[in-house]
Length: 91
Image 1: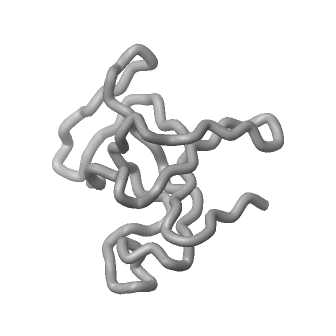
Image 2: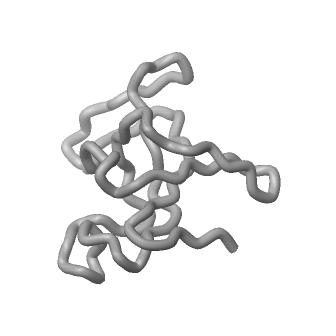
């Protein structure tokens, strides 16, 4: 198990076509300059988490900045970043 500390967040890279609730198709390609991820884990000190009164929850699709650390864990790539590097939640 990989668990973030403080206000860090762990994401898995998200690279596929997504259809929003409004029926809009949003396509993110591997060569896109937009970082899209799925929230895998949230640190206990995160003020953005639902547990602490925020909106962020595990499974959310988010846009994040280029300021992250890539981690290989059990043959999977994860991205560790501070919650301040999250730019938007995709609904």
